[in-house]
Length: 219
Image (cartoon, rainbow, N blue to C red; front, side, top):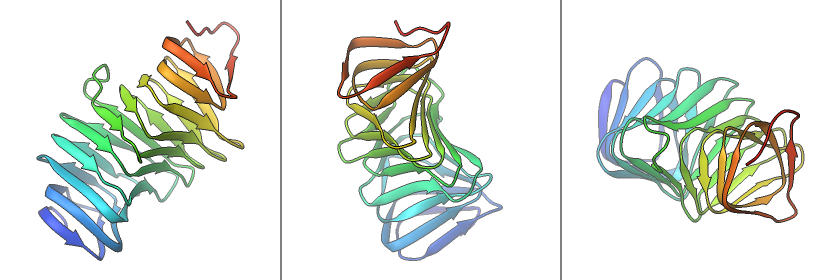
């Protein structure tokens, strides 16, 4: 279904988008491991939920653009299939994540918005933000009540404000701070301050470690 609008559709198949815009209104319910194999822009228009047993797989040229209030529901995985770059861009509205957003396959995913200073993105209870082999950039103010982690070979690059919750790393996973702000965050892992960054409202180290590069600071 290319160049089309899909509203309130239950899916149990593969939808591939390469050459046309893909607009979703009224939500998508994934079933039986269904797949949106995305190679272009998918616009989310109107308040809605995308969830269920399935995945949205980014390929070269893919992007999600959000315009209203969207929930990524439990069971859904949003990730890369290759080494390309993509974004989940909040043109307007907000996103509540109860799904898994994962940068893998050496690719890059950016979570960003038109107004990065406003908390338009919430990683809710049960939601997972993971860098596992790729790089996940958090470029917008994010409220974190779920899981945010850097796993083997992945980099979680924090370039905006993260409010609350625990941020962790394991193995060769890297937590990177680049003009990021940790607000009331618990750190469970090793974080490297690559450019001047900030801590507000207390920073708890739960077996965590901060590495501050020469000439850089965390204030």
